[in-house]
Length: 175
Image (tube, rainbow, N blue to C red; front, side, top):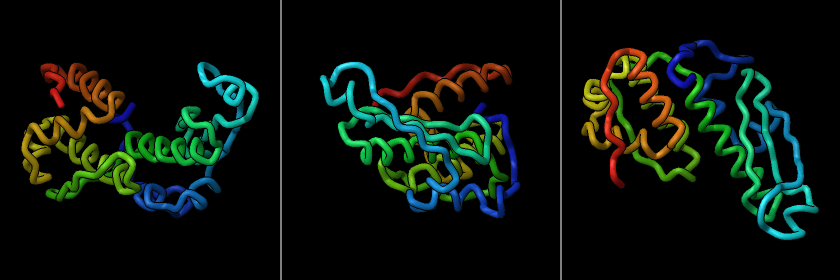
C-alpha cells in the first residue's frame, strides 16, 4: 500500500506537501469527522462521553485515522489529525529529486509527516534499495532504517515490499 501509489497529481489544486503542512483547522475541511464513545479501560468518562474521534480524508479513498486515548475530544482530534498526516505521507508518493536532505523530527512535530513522505519518495525512486536512498538523502544506512522503524506499519510494509521484489528482509533496529 505505502509503496505502490506514485502520483505527482495535485488534488483539488493542492499538493501532498501542502496537505501535510496545513493547519489542523484547514485539514479538517477536507475530512469527515466522526465522534463516538471509546471502549476499553477508562471508566464512565470513556464509556459514556463522545471523546473518541475518527477522521476520513475525503479526497483519497481509504485514508482514515482515529484516536481514543485521551479523555478530551480535542486532544483525540489533534492526535487523529497527526495520524492522518502520517497515513497521507505513507500512501501518496511523489517523484523524488536526485538527491535531498532528511531532517530528523520528533513524531509530534508537524513537519514529521513531510519528512517521512520525502524519505518514502526517495526509497521508491531507488526501488527500495535502502543503501542508495540513504546515500541520496545524505544519511547513514542505519539512520534510514531507524527512521523507517519508528512507524511500525511503515516498517512492516517496507519489509513486505522488499520481499515482493525478491530482496532480503532487514533486521529491525534496536533503539
